[in-house]
Image 1 (cartoon, helix red, strand yellow):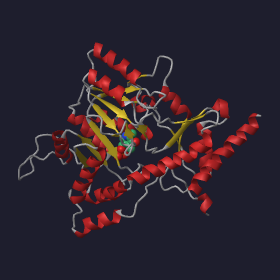
Image 2: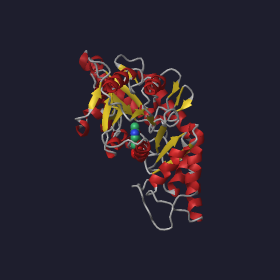
Image 3: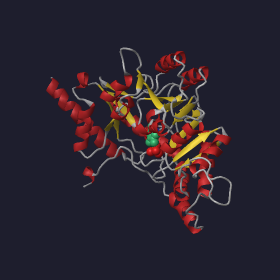
Image 4: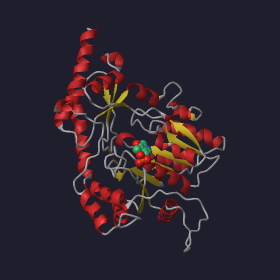
Length: 388
Ligand SMILES: *Cc1c(COP(=O)(O)O)cnc(C)c1O
């Protein structure tokens, strides 16, 4: 019963060549520790992102954690972070005992608003409480306005960590996503554009810092024949088997970006002209990998809310989701400070109330996508009929 097969938001999409690198690891018994696949995957990601180095890790979250440690962020420090994102962007701030301050989105990119950031930095400067770092997220593949953000951060000498977990394969004014800040992080979690089933990468042009990241990620062993430790480390390295999966996945990244952009285009062609439906924009001079196709739906105009659509899709065994719940609205971060877009408007809250993510997998067939489209069209027409 093909018509009732579940359609996922974003499921792993293997190329077939993964097995080759896995077999190689098995044949040489290089299952662990690190090894050729890890070294090669790091070099290949660094080349792809146009940076001097990369460190393969067990997750994107671990990469953010290490980036904060390398910037000496600790207890009592503050870190500014996008509010509209997955909780993993901010949790490492808490891991190191620092305090997150959340910055609202802007309508142009749905990402960190430069004007809200400017207000936050100005207030922090006058209170002599400047942040130790800023975590900028490139949501769903769309780049934040990096020129404006970089120039503000340079003015106050605050280093940038780019959370490019969702934007591998995207570019900002020609620069690969994740290559602009002091550190960039990628995720290879199962739902990301390429996957190692679980994993992450820290990238930077500071090779000395990356060397320190490798040290911290392998339990911080001092150079001695016995196990000696002077600082606290972590067990954060990627396995050599999984790095093999990553190498094969990276080879098809461009295909995956094209496929996801084609998925976006098909949705766009059907729904872009509809009153009350607005797709996540793509900023001029940027290219989004369109990891997930996301849009907002205005209930007043269409008679259908984002949750109505998600519900209707769910009945047809199709997975859709609201956009991320802003972190300043999470019970976990209820006490955190928040800078909204303006006094009157909180853009991330609006996006959360009206936004949804549609199935966007690079392995979704056009027929499956048509099922999604038909279900949405049907739901919209029912409401049209009842509104008349
Ligand atoms: C997936 C994701 C992460 C975390 O990556 P993991 O590899 O799952 O730890 C961080 N930030 C964002 C924005 C993500 O989407």
